[in-house]
Length: 443
Image (cartoon, rainbow, N blue to C red; front, side):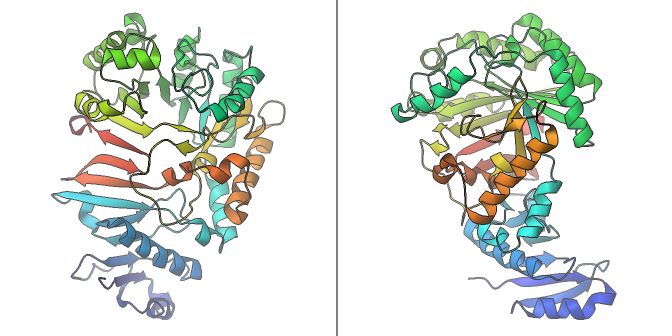
């Protein structure tokens, strides 16, 4: 095993602290002032760090990140700032982002056995984050895809009652009103100053909303980037032309198939019509960052043999290709490509806040909204909802206490990812149960 070499940056007044900190590791090391040119160091297992406090937290993060670096056999490990309270370090080749050739970059996430040693530091980080708001514009869909947990025919028999009970609970709910959407955006903007993006995702089809373009106009007036997930069947020529009048749109279009027969088997719709709409948008947009197009493929038994062909077909047409394993109640149908070293924080719970059309807020798309209900942002208030979310996620992280679905869920593994950089370009992002392929011509 290659011996690590620690390059430690420090300010002149803290030289003694720096020496004690570096010596405690038992690694070869050199100290350098924060503004000094980097010394020449041979080898790839270089740990460069600039501690803030020379604390035990920083020392434990460095030790754990080194083990993670080795586990992933990465060229470079850098901290995922969303989950790491101290980020002034990297391990390995810092030129992996720009050097010729192919390099694995590991985005380090501290595991729960580390976060539990320092609950206050990680809780403070959690409270400081802005959860990505994910709003439902519609709760009903125009399709009945076979893998849909709420309406599909191909879900595990043991989970039918679980999902159908939620569907029955939400009968009669459909569109968010424009006034309620404005109120939601006002609440979020007042609580999270600087929020400049919003996502519209499920459980219904957003382009069914009769005022979809009024909603886009409202987001545009607020200078907000917008992300949609859609089945694409309602993107006719008129809709496409109107969408191209906006800026900073990202659309993930669910396709799941290469052949029309497989698409019909999954979605009971016309693949050619949706593909034609995508091509029309790609041909007519003024530049890739005006309207970004991502196409997605949910791997499942009916389409698994088309996965490679799907990626090859769309990689140089769309901006990104997304492939993920089908899962129900947080349990994927397929084995992971790789596994993290230990239990991690959950990106679903800690990074997003889902809000239904009537203001009911929840925290995890692996389960049903009623199981993860955190309250209603209108009747209970946004602060109460956020406090309930923080309390639950912090309790899971600190003690392991969790609701039934969390105890059996494997989707927390998705929190960590690896990046593949080729000749200075990010080309792939790989998680245990999914991956993104990025069109090199559009990035």
